[in-house]
Amino acid sequence: MTHINAHLGYDQVSAFIDGELSPKETSEVEEHLANCHPCAIRILSATQLKAATRHVSERFVVPPEALSRLTAQLSPEASKKPAGVYTLRSWTWGALAASLILAVSLLGWHATRQSGSLAAELLDQHLAVLSGGSPPEVISSDRHTVKPWFQGKLPFSFNLPDALPAGTTLNGGDLTFLHGQPAALLRFNIGRHQASVFFTQRSRDESEPATSGIQSGFVIQYANTHDLRITAVSDVNPSDLARLMSVLVEAQSPR
Amino acid sequence: MPAPASSALFEQLALPLLPSLYSHAFWLSRNHEEAEDIVQETISKALRAFDSFHAGTNFKAWVFRILRNTFLTSRTAIAASRTVFLEDHPDLLNISDMSPTPEDHLLRLDNQAAMDQALDRLHPQLREVLLLCDVEGLKYKEIALVIDVPIGTVMSRISRARRTLHEHLQKQRGVSL
Ligand SMILES: [Zn+2]
View (cartoon, protein in one colour):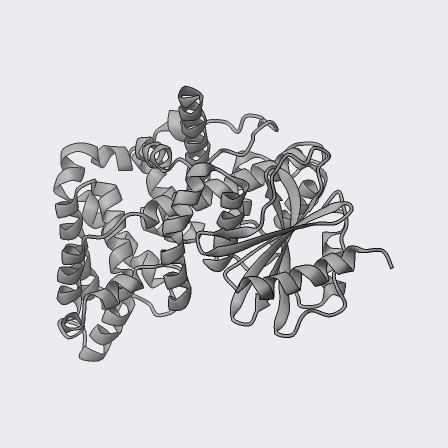
């Protein structure tokens, strides 16, 4: 189906991001993506559009009175409970706890998005992870599995530490783009919180002011090594995130 | 009427879907009052037909199919846009897959109003499949069941919907700059 030299077709891009290709077709696409930056960008662009479409609909609010009338029609018993119980069910994303965190943080997130900043993009990607969309491309807590998976997929390499801070586990990794730059996205759990850590190549013109801070209730931290920029976003407390950052930075220094 | 046990199961399956059913009905009819009527009728029909639902198949796809058929017999659909959903639009759907432009770049999707507007302007037939896919999370074969078309048509509509959306957004951006 895929010719070695042809770019991906529109239908292929769509079916790929929807997870509708056969394993064979999927690996053909992945093979093409590993060698074709423009198509990788198209995949990312399509993925973002898909997320944006979902957001439009998530902003749609079912009138509470209509919902309680319908609930009553379906289930006369259940309708005696507070209506709020049912509005919560409307969130399509997984766990209730995650919904609440998202619902709260999205308010701030919309404000952040207006500025169109790198921080907004970071939060966007981190929220996509939180909303339980897709599992990581490579699912493993073993750095010997995760690190090699990125090899050949990125124009740079990075190291993972031998040991992580107590209570921190690696869940896996994904290939992504940050400000148009290819990036490795590593997903960690710090206690009950999730953290997304992005590795990108340091650009020659370091125009981006990288100030760590708190945005929309999320902690964002940056660190630079000789060749890399490491960016972390999480709702965990800043000192726990900083501990993870420091071992990640440490792991990049030559031994 | 189904036995009490099966009506309890129906309730359990349908209750969490109410908000989705309502919002999809609203996207189809563009009218709150009618959206509620459509969902109400859908629930009644689905409950009556619940015996014909086979456990193990996708309940959501099954009930969305009923919702869609209910909409197609509703006031708005008959008055205005029913044909829009049922007719084939060769010009719209069978555009050959032109060679993709590798220059395709990331859109700034931070303008919510632009996004709303672009989705609103999308042809209803394209918007419908896109929402079933991106918002309701149905697989292509389930969407094929809901709207009663071959799976290949689902795929090309979704792909076309995204290209059109992308074009709208790119144009809007061009204007706003
Ligand atoms: Zn390509």
